[in-house]
Length: 438
Image 1 (cartoon, rainbow, N blue to C red):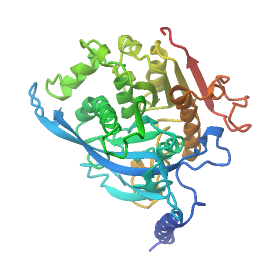
Image 2 (cartoon, rainbow, N blue to C red; image 1 turned 135 degrees about the vertical axis):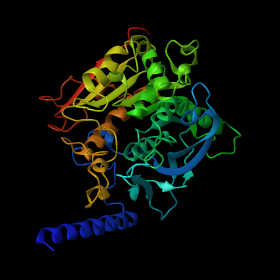
Image 3 (cartoon, helix red, strand yellow; image 1 turned 45 degrees about the vertical axis):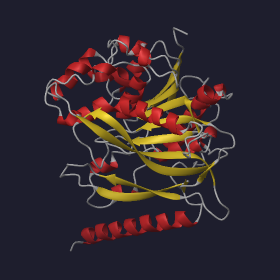
Image 4 (cartoon, rainbow, N blue to C red; image 1 turned 90 degrees about the horizontal axis):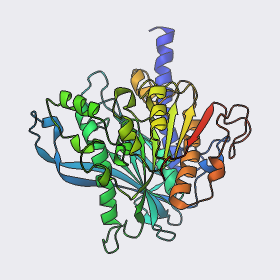
């Protein structure tokens, strides 16, 4: 055995031991770094809020949905679509208990022999099944939609942070679109917006007085924000009013042998505009997919009227930037909107940092680069996202006086942005455009 091979094997063993020790350590104390913790250079609103956080897992069934992966031309059977969700909320932590939990996810991709599924765990600062904190509520609702493939815990650094600031946050495992069950792309194209709107209705029902559910009196579904990343961005923009184009309908028909199941989500579909849900007050779209491929046209983008905060890297080679996210920002002329740009970043401006398992010998580069950014520290990105999303949602959902955090010189280079320590905003740009229609 060569010296180099022995070194690699020892490195793998050390990495595995270190990962296990870190997991055990974080369960026994609060001083160890957990995804989402504030770094020394974190901007002001990255810090957690006043509430302790609880977390629960649920599974909700959306009955009688189109089973597009079993479509035969225009004939599309129905099925009961199960959605697993993770719910974070302000909580009461019993004396002597630490607000710590463990999340489980998988690397790899279902039905891909080159990337077999590999389970891993990571820690969070919330307490599983904790009693809700109703004082101060009901709290605005935030619904989170992951990328393709992804999972409901992909943005836990942000979901926990928002719950600590007085939001009920529900993140969806989009069936047939997670790492564990990724299937035909038609399901992701069709189901994103309907899944999001179903979850909104489900929370509205469960949060009603007299529902005898823990969400009763806790969540305010009438004041809702949507957050989406990549294909999640594709979904939240449509759910908020940006109807899809006829070009998407043609592509969808091609990959489904003639199905028109997506027609009701098109901008020119009769009644689409009237179906826009007035409970949605704001949208955050990380690197939304589709504009480069003709998913929206000017008509569809003009239908987006809710305040929207876009976040992207200007080197995004998945969703595109100039002809992708920035083109959506420019075209959504009837929305008050922002575009935060990470200079030299590519697509991964939203997720948690890469788990330690992605650095072990034998893991695929694709698994590491599903999370990693080549030019940025992901933990720093996480803190910046926490800051700006907190400012944006604070303004539009809680009427907080956070305008100073968004009224900034466009380019941070050479400036000290409000809320940032000197020199720490380098490489950021923030554009703001007001709505033409009020």
